[in-house]
Structures are given as structure tokens and as C-alpha cells.
Length: 225
Image 1 (cartoon, rainbow, N blue to C red):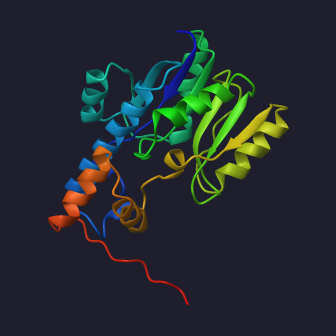
Image 2 (image 1 turned 90 degrees about the vertical axis):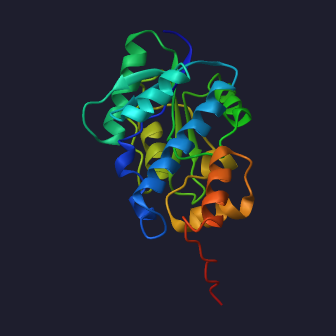
């Protein structure tokens, strides 16, 4: 195992996207999670420079989809902490001779192969590349060279935390901002914004069709005067 590997941790999709419960059913939230995962895999697989993709997951359907796409599955028997699982996967890649790891979530369906390629290019000059969420405070991707050079701390205010960690470890680092990396789907506002974009992704088509059928409830956000 050499080169740069992508790591896409994903929990059991039966419990995915609970913040979307007011606007869509459990079944629809699970379908959304599966389709977003496939969009992310498609972008990664079309990005030159990636040696492989590792997916830590306890989910049977995610495992089936991942194997269909030819990715490496790291079986997780029970749902566990995202950062711990990401760290374990990164350490496994390091132990097997991998040069770098790109850790990213499975809920950024607007990700493009061009964005991934730009991040991989940055890896040649920096030890850490931090991919900003569109709120400007979260992290939607973390490239580490080598894979275990820093412990990931995804979560609230993680952008600042990752910068602090890189500085404290003396690691060269950069913050990168891309629309695809930045756009994660967590809330009804994210669903509305995705619908307004008329995205040609599978996720975009799924959301548009579900809204037309009344399976996703959307309301225009209130404007504060």
C-alpha cells in the first residue's frame, strides 16, 4: 500500500441524518445517505493520483456498494466515534506503507474530481491540508502526509482546532476552500440550497424528485430584515 489513500468513514445509515427527521422519513434519509456516498465515491474514483479508497463502516449496504466500486472496506462491528475510526484507518494505511491520507465525509455530494486533484497536488508541498466547510468553522476534509502525522478532530469549530494542532506539531499546512468539499448535507436549509442549485449529481436528482413527490418537505428560508 503506497501513495495517497482516501478514507471515507460512514456510520450505520439506518441512523443517518437525524437532523433531517422533520422534513423526511427514516427511509428517505437512509436513501439520501447511500446516494451521497456513491456521489463521493464517483468523484474520488475519477481523481488522478489516488492510490485507493478505504471505507470504515459497520453498514451492510455501504459495504455492498463499496465492494461494487472496488474500494477497500474496513469493517467496524458497531457504530463508533468518527475521529477514532478515521485515526485507526489512517494508522492502518501508514503501517502498510501509504504516503498520505485524505480523510473526508460521505455527505459532500457536490465534490468533484477536479477538487480532489487540486488537494492532492497540495500534498506535495504541505504536510497538512485542511478543507473548510462552507460555514467557515468546520472541516470537511483533511489531507495528512504521512497518514498518522496528526490526530483528526472533526466536529464543531474543527477548522481552528486543526490549524492549532498543525502549528503545535510544527507541520506545514494550508487551508483550502472548494464549493464541493464545503457543501455538506446536514439540515433542511442544506436540502433547500441543494435543490436551488439544480445539481446534476445523483443526490441532486434524488432530492428534486423527492420534493416533487412530496417526500421531502422544503420551505424557503425566512429572510431577516
